[in-house]
Amino acid sequence: MQNTINLELMKNLTVLYVEDEENIRENLECCFSSMFKKCITAKDGREGINKFMQFQNKIDVIITDLNMPHIDGINMIKKIKSINPKIACIITTAYSDKQYLIDSINYGVNHYILKPFKIEALFKEVEKSYLSTHYVNKLKEQNEQIEALARVFNSTKEDLKKENDKELNTKLTLFSEIIQLLDRR
Image (cartoon, rainbow, N blue to C red; front, top):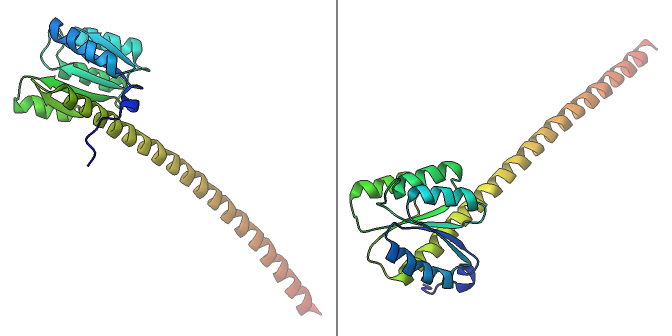
């Protein structure tokens, strides 16, 4: 089992990091800036939603604290997932309350990491979250393409069947008329 982090992948990711504790946010932003293509930060859930709206086409993964002023991490993710259900999300928190964990699962959070955590473990979870979300989204897109092709195929098949039935009926009618002509002789 490979435990190393794919640095090439990480250097291509843009992360939205939402944390209300300024010293933690600034320290991790420094680490994130060296690991990721870009790190966008927000100090609470409301600002996190605004930053997501501003950069939504660029953000690959959201990392958020759970308890924050204005809008907490769960409600921020709920709002963001209503806009883009395909985004990978990770919650970091000092709280191990089961209800938070259940809410996280219900709103499509990829990973739930308890503080304090090792930065390497967080990077590994970012990689896993992004890849699992990326591959699930790719599979959904491919399934949609397959379903569209199946609809086209079935429609074409029906058209051909109708055309063949029409052609067969024409030939049978012609054959029947020839037999009638032969019978009259």
